[in-house]
Length: 135
Image 1 (cartoon, helix red, strand yellow):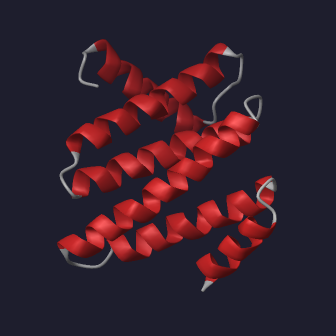
Image 2 (image 1 turned 180 degrees about the vertical axis):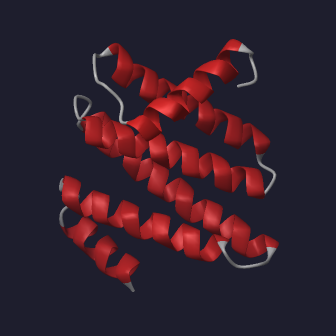
């Protein structure tokens, strides 16, 4: 129901970053709730919700490239999508998403933004993976 409301608000205000963010959050919550259930089809559905959320996160980041908030949102969405992809065995998508997460975080760091501790830790892990060529 929350997704339907968010979607209607987003459709009515497609240029609204807040409406897009609200829909992104609704999709991520739906992905989480769906993914907590048993069954391959439900796991694929959870991944679909998460991919839709990622698309919105990337749109917000693209439209607000100097914003740490939207950069962090995109990085987190890439990471969550990677986790969902791993659950369904879509390892290529999972690795692409980890690469996307690293690219967003690297862009933030090289632009002089200090990452919060959680994102800094993730960035260090991804750097180590890139250095060992596992991504």
